[in-house]
Length: 410
Image 1 (cartoon, rainbow, N blue to C red):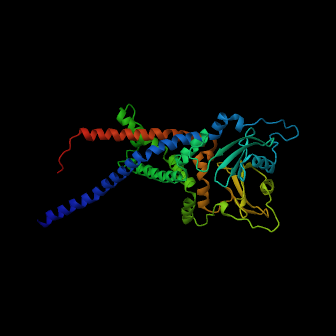
Image 2: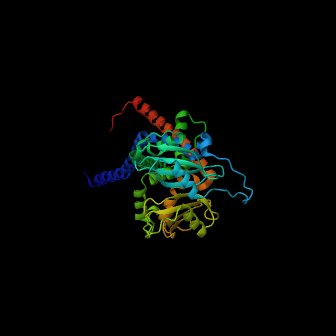
Image 3: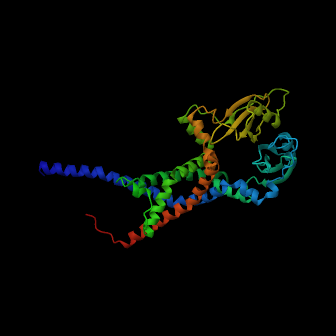
């Protein structure tokens, strides 16, 4: 072979080496997107539909069970307008404890959603069975109790079934881990779909729109790519926050690797027992919180889990705190009443804390009020459409391959 022909041959090989990897990489991303979408994408349908229902879970549950979850507001002649005549937290917890199963421990108290809603008191039993006890906050009367078995996979109540299906596929703790792994794989599917979609030819208008008057094949393809593209930020945020809730400790650990100043969760804080001094009680803890932070309504309280646990008080609808998520959490020593820690939009110490605190508000859509909830609701309804159009696209391409005879490769 002459030197000139050898040079031309080498140039041809280099050219092929420059173009082949690009095609090979695209085919790899396409294959990953395809198989993850086919086998894991079916879960996206379940996650989407149950998530859409869960966005309005409180309203739906109250509509289905008005006698259990709603109360009549008594006349409030001697109170300021809009101020609820609620009984004390200690009294609400007392009547809930009387209705709970023997040897139960009160773990959490959630405040009323509005002026006509009940308080929800959670009680845990040594067997790991637990109850939700609903209390009329005006009269300190129990309106009803929901009980859950220790190994109960399928609850007896509609909204609880929806939640368990959404978080764990009705498979318990193993299901929560499985759903977190599947959410990560769906994130990979979304990212590879974005890579495959990216218009390397520069035809952005074609890539961003649905062609008018297109046939069923083209319309199906355009609908799949445009829905996935425009909902990519929302779907990505929802899937990532789902991993945060199902695998919380590993998620926080990874976040701290990138943001070392991120604090540990508040439930890891401890109280210092004082000899002869009993726990201050829930009402006193709420009074301490409001003394230092008078704004905001009672959102809930996590009770100390043991002799060294802390009270975690949640205030909601705090004025001027944030336009997106106006909630504050205050950790209080159960003996001295000292405020140990405060978590709020104006008390964050690192980018990692901001990232973590945004997960639940984004997942539920509550970060942006009603517009955010409606967006999450519509996004959930779009999930079956994305999956169905993807499967149809795959079947269409299979039919083409079956009908087209293979040509010999030169």
